[in-house]
Image (cartoon, rainbow, N blue to C red):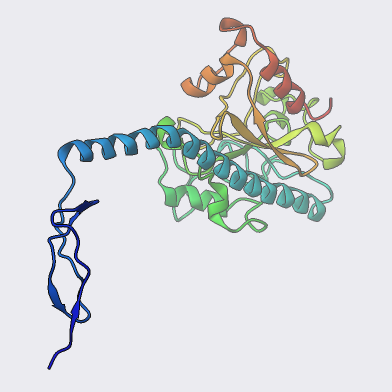
Length: 303
């Protein structure tokens, strides 16, 4: 025979929350002494919940986006640090000579400034792509593998910043370039448009290395980062655009091997980034020259 228990009698119809206790009962042992009536959300309650969730998302999303951008910036700085160490390792192995910073396909291979850290995108047989052909990822990676820094940095993922938005501007996979006077595009003879008197080809030629930029982030609407990153050597205007991937700042790698995220101050610098404008003069916009003056000093390695 199954044992029986008397359960406490709730007043009939008493509501607690969403449960309605329905009175006195003699129930088998182990069973509850009430029966519950379960109901779902009303339409009004559901709309209130949705509104609260939407409000929370509106409040949190900017913070989450900022946190993500800063996290990408930290990863980007760590990647640049790898390239700076490779830059010094190359100099150690090559009588203090700097690796070539110019990736331009028109440089003669036997020239002293041709030892580029990466080479142009190419086919499997080594054929360099024509200027008007946007490279595939495979073709660009072949150029990276052919570069003189690849033996020091063999992880292809390090050549790309996760925070980069290169597709927005038609850029390629590689997110970094060497500045033009660091044995780069401006180290070629004057007859080829260079400034050899201002450029350095040896590490010992760099004055105040803690203030001189070697690597920076950039993109190129031609499909990959051609040449070096350059600006007007007199500091009057920009030549190549900048990128601002990380919460209003860009990652810069300096000749003493330290990396920092530099915050840009001028409205014209934002325009330079958003429009990816070539040869922009700040005086045409806000006359705020703080950013261009900062980069001018960082760009000239002998000053």
